[in-house]
Every structure is written in structure tokens, then in C-alpha cells.
Image (tube, rainbow, N blue to C red):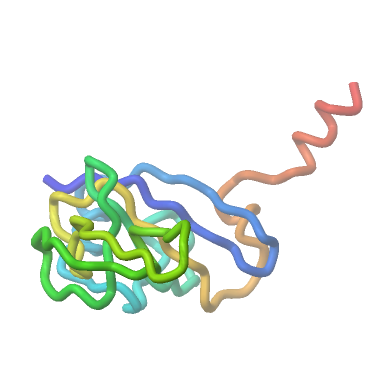
Length: 136
């Protein structure tokens, strides 16, 4: 059975929220690729649309949109996801995971692209309670 940690980014508020997803909700992500849109109901955001923007497997290898499938692949990178060069012209062979989500993926990054209302309120993480606790 698939189990993921889903990191939901709210670009309007500049906040991120983590949710553990398993069972039927996790199966909604299986077979999807980076850039595809999914229903937000899987992470408790009914009425929202989420775009899959990235992810990584259990060892921390990043998913890359230009690598097809679900398997691992060694590619020579000049920069981008998986490698940040420290000098001009530096290249490095890096092992990355394909763009399709499978059971090997441990974390899925998504971004809210459509939906009405406050994402924090929909996820039950209102800042009003935290602000009230800080004032005491």
C-alpha cells in the first residue's frame, strides 16, 4: 500500500503544509507525473486543485520532469533539480528518479493552483490560535 508525505504549497500566502497520506488517498497520486493536476480531496482540500511540482524517494533522490518513468537513472547535470554547481562549467553525474509517482516515492510536493478560500483554514491550521497563544 502506498504511503506519502505530501507537502502542500500555498503560493498566495507563501506557506507550506505537510500531510501524511496513505490508503485510497495515496492511490490518487500513483501513476501521475510531475506537472499533472489532482483533486485536493486527497489531502483534505475539497474543492481545490493541486499541481504536482516535485518529490523525492526514501533516500532523498529528487524527481526530475525530464526523466521518463519511475526508475532511477544516472544523468550528467549542469544544474537544476538534483545539482547546484559551485563553479562555471561544472558538471556532475547524479542519480535521480523519474517523473512518475510510484511506491518508491516518499514525498510529493504539490502547489495549489485553483480553489476558493483560505488554504490554512481548509487544512485546520489557522494562525489565529497560534497568535492568541503567543500573546499570553
